[in-house]
Image (cartoon, rainbow, N blue to C red; front, side, top):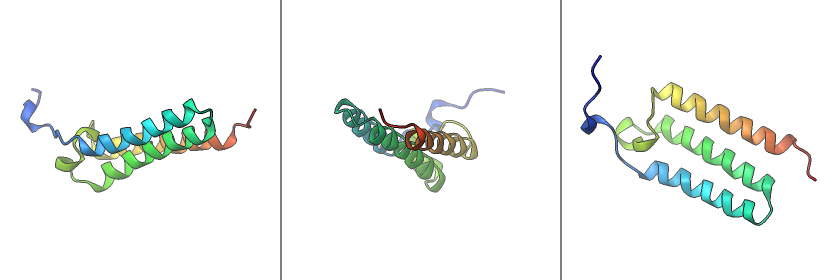
Amino acid sequence: MPDKPPESYPLNPWPLVAVICVVLGAVVTALFGHWRLASTLIAAALLLGALLRLVLPRSVAGLLVIRRKWIDVTVMAVLGVATAAVAAIVPPN
């Protein structure tokens, strides 16, 4: 099976930029010592990515498109929920 031509791949960067901005906010929050809030923000970024991949068409979802939609959404949603669960369950120091 031949590869798809490069021009067939979606290139819209904005949905991914939105997710990365939330992750950067989490990194800054972690630098100030608020690891639980930072973990929750990372979970929110993953869930935002899953939501954007679910509702946006392939041409608009851009760089969030990796595999089939159901795989992308499932992986990001499971990782987001797992990260949120860990942030909520781990006791503070």
